[in-house]
Structure formats: structure tokens, C-alpha cells
Image 1 (tube, rainbow, N blue to C red):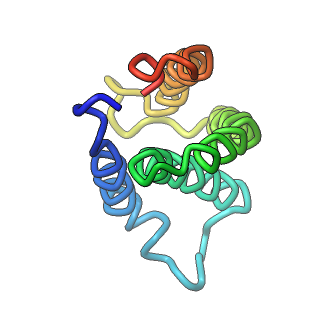
Image 2 (cartoon, rainbow, N blue to C red):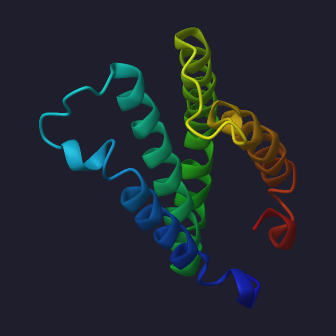
Length: 138
């Protein structure tokens, strides 16, 4: 494995910690009652946390020479990723149905999901396409 990717799990752990900090007020800080949190938000959180778990586990598995387990976890992503995409689409749909207007008229946060999908889908598909070319896959 390329040296640059050897410790990539630290990047994904940092992203996980930033997500927890960023959503503390609206989600994680509401544990255990989750007042005002919908089932759809729980579904989305579970999918995002599952995806981040995969991103953290995969390089660790390779580092520990657990290639077969790495492949199995990769195949789990074939289920997690479509469900993650579905959760993003459903949250966007709900936001537009509720017509939740942005606080700052210059930035419509309802459109963040479109940016997420535009970046995420090609990256994921490329990782799957190049699964046999380690440098590109990683």
C-alpha cells in the first residue's frame, strides 16, 4: 500500500470527530432522549456512521493484512452506500417539502445534499471500478 494511504484511517477518524462536533447541538447532544429528532434523521445518522466506520476499518484491515475481511467489508458497502444515498435524497426532499428557507439567503443549505451526491457518487464508483488497482482504489 502506498505510504500516503497507510494512515488514512486517522483522516476518517478526524472526520468522524468533526461530524460529532458539528452535529452535537442538533443530534448527538440530544442523546438519550433525542427530542425533536425524526426517524429519518436517525436513519441518516446510522448510514453516515456506518459509512465512516467502513472508511476507518478498511485501511486498518489492510494494515493488519486482513485482505479477505477488507473485501467482505467492501461488499457491505454495496448495501450501505445506496442506503446512505437514499437517506440524503429523503432528507433533501423533506427539506424542500417543508420549504425550510435558509437563514442566510446567499447560502441555501438545502442544496448541500446535491453537492454531496455530485462528489460522493463518482468517488465511490471509481473506488469500486479500481478495486484491483490499489493506488487508484485507495
